[in-house]
Image (cartoon, rainbow, N blue to C red; front, side, top):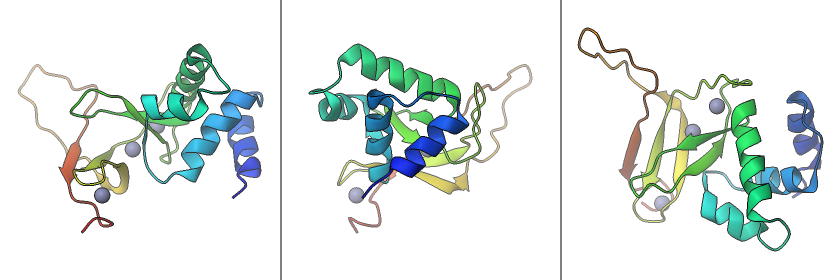
Length: 140
Ligand SMILES: [Zn+2]
Ligand SMILES: [Zn+2]
Ligand SMILES: [Zn+2]
């Protein structure tokens, strides 16, 4: 499948120029319906791009609101494309993430919103992340 048009559109919307590295990494996200681990991305781009390029590209995507991070129990950071109208410096990814114990994939459940968390007086939440683990629909 060819994602050129979509990639061009995403980069243009975020005022980023088209570079081979950005193209390749966006292609990885678009061709995969789920999250990608940092190590995965490095492995799949490693022949063409060095670690610094990959790192910088992921960081600019995070800043621009193109991708968001997903916490995992083993502390390996995973990234997924944003769908919730994220913009530069402002993410609105208030959905739950699902980690499949069988196939190991991490999935954005875009329609499942994080419930309100009631904190004791004096506490101010800045970020709430919910990761549900279990068996995904493809593995059932
Ligand atoms: Zn986001
Ligand atoms: Zn699964
Ligand atoms: Zn997500």
